Image (cartoon, one colour):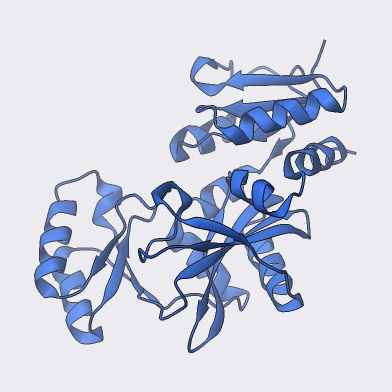
Length: 280
């Protein structure tokens, strides 16, 4: 029997287990599918997946499996364009800027020399990020030229994606940021991620606290979601001392465990409901 919903994953996290439980509670036919075990005959049509909720953590596994399934006629959330655009910080930045969403000021450089020249002109500190990555990995604060030379020189020996040097302002803000979970055109819940460290990722020890959603925040998040053609996304914002709310990331396969815990909102059930109605 064709499932109503397939959850496609490559790592089982709390979020994927919660989607399965939400589907069972609604008495729908929900299938869990490990992408690492998936093979697709690309020239055939396909009708045995239902609506797919894309949850692969790997950017490359995510976008390639989405491209294949979408091309074969499967309804998949989020779509290929969202995977590509939201999964790359440079792409996201340019799209947010285009639609008027405030973002941290950023520079992209394509060699060690041009990156160091830009840093010398603009000053320190700056934050260097891989354009593709998650969980705060390989994000470094550059306090001076010595730190910048060492980190950038190391990146020059890595895979080519890490030789694209994405440099972002170090935003002056409270010791926290905001994660807003969007299902369709609504923020269903939001949290502050507090940390004594300048990185606020929950995977790095951030502490969650409920954040009240304002009209301004929701308006910004709707624009950000639409900029990357998203349906279910997490939008990360910072409260700049100088500019107010700025968006620094849109998450294609957002984590929401701590948002559910703190806000007591049944996000997985809302995601299942949205997916069930998305192909009507």
